[in-house]
Amino acid sequence: MLKSDSEKSSGDIYQQLQRHLDELPTGFPSTKSGVEIRLLKRLFSLEEAKIATMLKFGVEKLEPLDSIFERLKPLGYTKLDLEKRLDTMVKKGLIIGKTETGIKSYANAMLIVGIFEFQVDKLTDDFIQDLTQYTKEKWSLEYAKIRIPQLRTIPVGLNIEHSIGISTYDDIKRFIEEGKGPYMVANCVCRQVKDKVGEPCSATSRRRLCLGFGYVAQLYIESECGQEITKDECVEILQQNEKEGLVFQTDNSKDGIIICSCCNCCCPGISGLKNSLTPGKISTSNYYAEIVPDLCISCGDCVDRCPMLAISLENSNASISRDRCIGCGNCIILCESEAISLQTREKEYIPFDSMEDLYVKILERREIIKKREEKRRSRKK
Image (cartoon, rainbow, N blue to C red; front, side):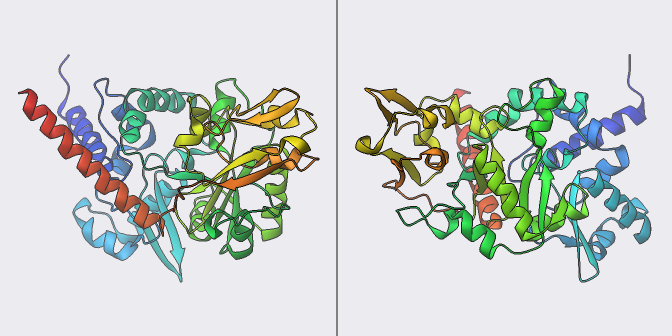
């Protein structure tokens, strides 16, 4: 059956949006199945898709409403109408927006990290099904080529004085002591996905445990994806997360704007590491755990605790595989004999100065990969 002109026009808009979002750092590549277009149609109305194709991308520096209004005048909206539409898109988790000194600003959001995380408390079965197909079919494969993670592992230990010097950008205490307000907590969208598909988290029954600071917290609070809390409440949540053996991950920058508390059953990144042969070699952690055999009492608590299956009992002593250890520090918390400590890896991984720097580097890497693949295709011809 032939498509009507309106259907063709609708399809063109969503294809334009796909190409537009594919220019963002983590990309939105097309597929043979067209699942990415179906995903966009589930999220964006036709009018919202038109608006999104004309927005820019920003992390901390978003574009003021006045500038957006001038550029979008061809769409025929009044400034007030455009503001309402943009605010609705923020609430739906399609774009990011914030208000500062009375001025509203907006920007496109990436798929991951971005639109997916903003679907917290709004997940539908159809969205999960399409996103799962899309990430498996294309998105994850394309992003894996970049080899620049958006998150990195830092050690737990709010009440532990590690025997080695922990770099300031790896120190969970510094995140709390020096973190810029406001502070917010959000439900974990990864665990909500697992709940939806009937695979609840085996590590914790709680969902309200993802933390944000500064401008990220503001974005979550304004979009109603997160709730503002105090610094003391942040500490209480982190302490409970440590008790349950969750792995701390933060953004791959020195800013320290988020703390995810992950597990090896719900978090794609941590579960992916667990299922690899050598998670210790491919993780972004700067540390590894080491056991003093003479102090080990062979209780086995650390064996059960380790999210990477890096610890085993051999000859009445616990033994840690350096290749599998990601330096999360969870084993140290349970070790009553104080036989385990963190050690610094020979090569230090230094995070980017800011999230802006991180995404500039990701875009540069994507351009290099694109040119390399174009050369390969031309050679085959």
